[in-house]
Image (cartoon, rainbow, N blue to C red; front, side, top):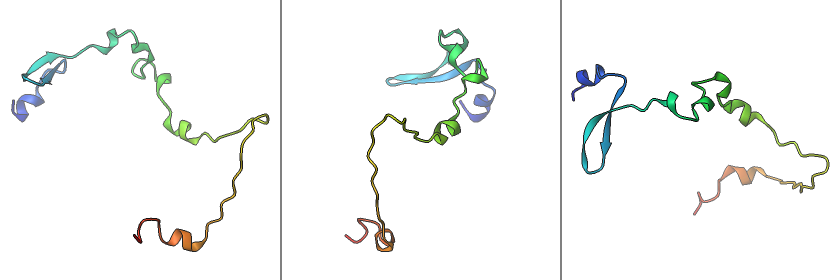
Length: 87
């Protein structure tokens, strides 16, 4: 197919390529018929994953948790030349 034929290709069709078989037109799967469709953001916007909210959470230890605290001192010489650059 050339670019013009691809531009007017029916939206319910796709070109499927499988190893050992020539590419062919195939009907797209209707995701609205899948049993887990109700969990997609296409079904309900409340299912959209909030990546910024996920990344903004900070570790908040509980008062009963035991954890170790380490103090690290870094000098200007340590950050001036990254490890492995001098080898």
